[in-house]
Amino acid sequence: MSDITQEFDVVVVGAGVSGLYALHHFREHGFRVHVIEAGDGVGGTWYWNRYPGARCDVPSMEYSYGFSPELEQEWEWTEVFPAQDELERYFNHVADRFDLRRDIELGTRVTAATYDDERRRWVVDTDHDDRYSAQFLVMATGCLSAPLVPQIPGRESFEGISLYTNAWPADPPDLTGKRVGLIGTGSSGVQATPELARDAAELFVFQRTPSYAWPAGNKPLDPDLQQKVKSQYRELRAGQRANYGGVVGTSGAIAVPLPRDVAILEATPEERFAAVDELGWAACRAWSDVLRDTEANELGAELYREMIRRVIEDPDTAEGLSPRDLPIGCKRPILHTDYYETFNLDHVHLVDLRRGGIEEITPTGIRTAQGEFELDVIVFATGFDAMTGALDRIDIRGRDGLRLRDAWSDGARMLLGVQTVGFPNLFTVTGPGSPSVLANMITGAEQHVEWIGALVQYMQEHGYATVEPTRAAQDAWVEEVNRVATGTMYTAPSCNSWYLGDNIPGKARVFLPYVGGLDTYIEHCDRVAAAGYEGFAFS
Ligand code: N01
Image (tube, rainbow, N blue to C red; front, side, top):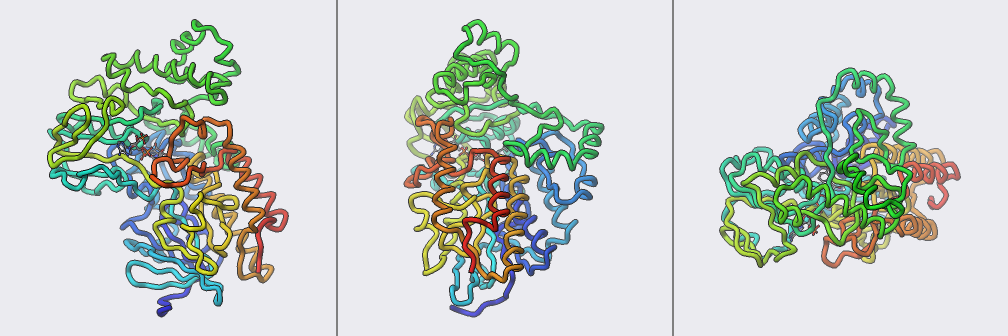
């Protein structure tokens, strides 16, 4: 191996939500920490995904760090659901406030990480030809950070402007008066649609699978409410960790209320449609059985489609936007502002690809089986190689040269989403097998970083140099992750999603996040720690 440029205690990969806190936390505990970040700025998701309309679906007062009461008090949020620019400012403020920048290397990509068994340290290579060594490697690489570029024939032949929601330029081109095509109607495409429609002369939304999306009800944050929440932050933070999704529901911001204690299978058609009159978009989920039973789910979906028919003026467009053959709850609910209403504008057109798919991208637009669309701009909102993609793209080699990619060829296997067998002292924050994308990411990331920090401290106290899971404990946790996912709509046969790796050709179909709830997950973690990190082997 060539020469090591610098030695650290901890190398952290990524300066997003998790990486920033990992740096702060480990540094506070006396470690020499170095963070490597591919972007030219901090904030991770909120640095890259700066497409128009990008907004968080967790209330701002909850989608914020809880580790510093001073930070909580001094930062002023402006909206119930924070937009990308506000979040980017927040993470930059955190970086300055806690003097984090001096240990962050921006604009640098980690290319490889190799475990040196003799020295019991990780060797980390970057695309700047640096080679660092560290006892601990923390992969704070994010769950949705490896962009998926769709393999549509002719993509590179397009002579207009190609834009990607997950790598939106800081200085974007003016779309005023342009003919814009948007491919993808997941969260990113749904959020971007109304904003793109604002500027474009014509907007064509190419939809392969319609989404289930609910109005966010976003609004300016009431200053009195902000003060009230600030006075109760300790209880709020405790409540988040004792909550299934890590969201207590401040600011009146519950767009998708919890179900009532009534089964839709027992309701008459009149009662079902009366719920639409009363609850609008929330009606479809307002029943105790909709997320548990596929027949009930289909009745709920019909109420959702009824809302589409009520909002969308053109019946053909309404039918095109209507999800069929996939259950409500197959993915985390999408929150939007005016998505459906946008399709009532004369210059906005749905291209329902179920009626004829994309055949190729040409120099002048998109050719589908339904005809050709002349475009000046194509926006790709086509998603990510989720959960494992960012790790896969680094050549990670553990004990005996084992490649992480090979170890996970049949699906990611981790203990509690923090460690995997064969990769000592390598930790992931919100990795596969943790609640991650199914809960408040900041709450989850803080809990993970603190739990990993306590584990490392335990090692120091006991004179251990390395830690990794036992195979038996890892297998048992993977089984538990599968057990709680079975029977949910997330794993219904008709649900194809990135949670299962379905969007990546050849990726093993394995449900990646832990769906048992952040609260239950934290109980598991606490139990393991209290039992001397049961299931982890030290040397
Ligand atoms: O990506 P996606 P995303 N031809 O994978 C379509 C989080 N997030 O960036 O469904 C045509 O969900 C694809 O079609 P299909 C959130 O967790 C949160 O939107 O595969 N279409 C789909 O419609 C979310 O789940 C927020 O049939 C193609 C779309 O592209 C996750 O990020 C905001 C195609 C991809 O949807 C990912 O969301 C944004 C092709 N070749 C993101 N390839 C918040 O609100 C793909 N598609 C917090």
